[in-house]
Length: 246
Ligand code: FPP
Image: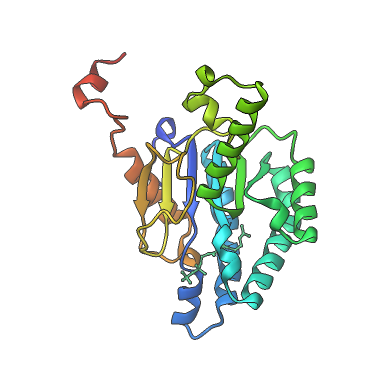
């Protein structure tokens, strides 16, 4: 079948879904058609990840910088997002998936925000996979926000300098309830992080696929996960040290 070891799956899988526009342009189609096909891939990958037993799946759906795209594309992407969230909420409930978002939500149109909040509320008691969409998300903005709030808490005395360590800093990020990603996939052959989870990716295994997002289906996910399972994660230690650990 997929040849995966269920014991060695990433606990947290993060994906930069790239190449919708190019997929469409290569076929003389409008970019939005690429995004529509991209949504179909989102459905497949969410379902497959949940079925495999991945606990956290985080998808980069819209970056803080994506607001700079042509107005018509931004509008269509927002409409697609709202439609996806509305339609998929029922399926998430059936699959025991908990919906979550990270990013600067107050920049989203109010109707998208409402759909987001409703999906969060209606899935809040689900105990299966936690699906996080990054919406209007930028990692530098997130780190700055955390630094600002830490500065405020230091000034007010609710936080002391001695308590400021990596764990505490992490608790000020959007991802405070989510472990760092074990594995990051980026599709469409681009080899960049593009302001995604900069703090959280410190020890993440990276995987770049040449396949455009609309064509990244279950087999491509298995291929990526098999690659992940063949790697040795050392977190700065030596191989020998890892082998001697019980
Ligand atoms: C990258 O393709 C993709 C995006 C900017 C957005 C991803 C959005 C979707 C898959 C659809 C909506 C999301 C959900 C979760 C329903 P690109 O346009 O940057 O492609 P290009 O680099 O080839 O132009």
